[in-house]
Image (cartoon, rainbow, N blue to C red; front, side, top):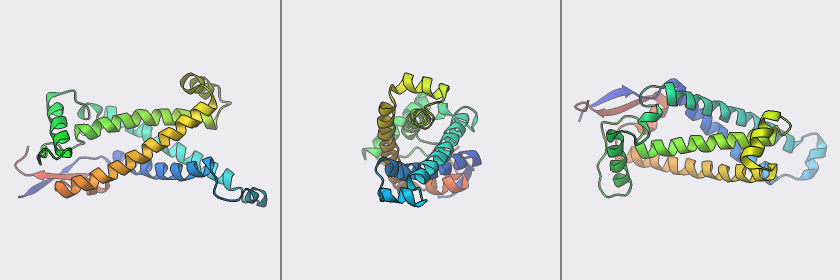
Length: 216
């Protein structure tokens, strides 16, 4: 079978993806340290200041995370047709059929693959939208914890989370959501790449995906 190459993911989306990956990894590592330091507290008095260093790295990674999410919000509205929110939700008959096909495929009820679709399948799209919403709450709780004296974040922090301790707890829970999401995401990308020769893994590097030439 002859396959055609199609440009699907813009450079902006790919930059968003890898910025999100690097920031989540950094935030998780530094967040675990901030929650439960694994170095001796006596190091704080030697001029190394590991907790301060970790907090600063955590803050910088948080700004990178925030920038990535803002870029994705922009692409949800103004990206190409594969990157926009309406292509990711079951709001059209085509998308509803794709959701049904994908769920059956993931459940091993049949081996059908929607070869017409180049962007995210609708199941993945809905999870991504949910993840963006979770990211907004993660950002809000993070800025509330980092800048409690700021009037803007104090107002929204109290409104959304109440006390800082509640915000810290929810911030920690959301971190686990992103870790579990990342693990499942990696598994499904590899699973899809093995079952369907559309170049899903390489597409996040090149922007290109493939489908049979007779599919329009």
